[in-house]
Length: 311
Ligand SMILES: Nc1ncnc2c1ncn2[C@@H]1O[C@H](COP(=O)(O)OP(=O)(O)O)[C@@H](O)[C@H]1O
Ligand SMILES: [Mg+2]
Image (cartoon, rainbow, N blue to C red; front, side, top):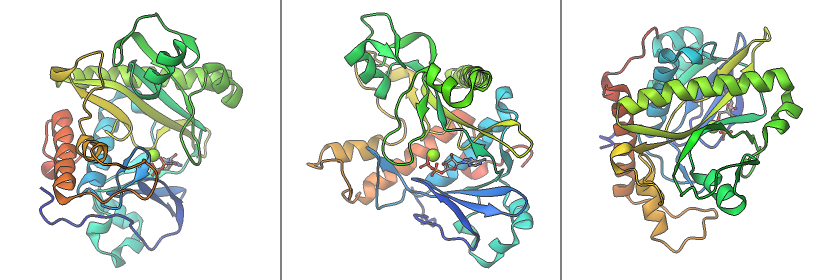
């Protein structure tokens, strides 16, 4: 249940706004830092819903912090802290707004120049990868063995990069296009880091009965030229998590997080272009429950009792 907590659809903080994305407001903070505030906005079929999902932003932020602390391949990364007291000390402007509008949903991070490549790793054939394979027999331009079913496990995980589109859908690209964009050395490094992260996370999720079907990483170059893992990491918004118990290749798999929203929208006669229909309270509450549950399944702790190590 949302238990009456403040849901945040569009946070407005007294700081210079540097980016407003589908889910996050990113503010500039003195000292080459950014405050990344995860709102409770939810999108489905690439359209942002009008109703926020209470607790969602907090889940995304705390889960990112949990994975960053736990995965060896995550370092170096951009996170400085998610601890509200430490954030307040570094960003005194926040003292003038209600704490619930930013605390636990915000990450203080180092600013980087993001590389214009979404580093997707896929262990299973879902989403746009399934569509490319069904239509062309390839993934990221490379041929795959024939006869694979929808949601099939791939013979080995694949690096399947995409462009970071400013508007509209990201577009899958081939590895040689990554090389052309960032150079051969960096392209190799992005691929190797992405595989290492996927492998560690896949093993962790598997111990908890969850398949990590695919996930997307972003990297940036910091002020001293170092490559850092940035953005959200291994959240349900950037990853497909499937319950192992219900895994059935040959069909679409239920999503652990947004399924109530998708089911509701699928039952309507809506053409998937904005504005989105409004979500009933029961759908919103069921979605909050899903986000809390995936957090607990992965980390083994309830969100309310969670504080990341070293925060
Ligand atoms: N450390 C960082 N330095 C600079 N930009 C970052 C950093 N971490 C994340 N970003 C960028 O911040 C934005 C996060 O906002 P989000 O709502 O997720 O946007 P989007 O709709 O583009 O996914 C993304 O554009 C991401 O590339
Ligand atoms: Mg994003």
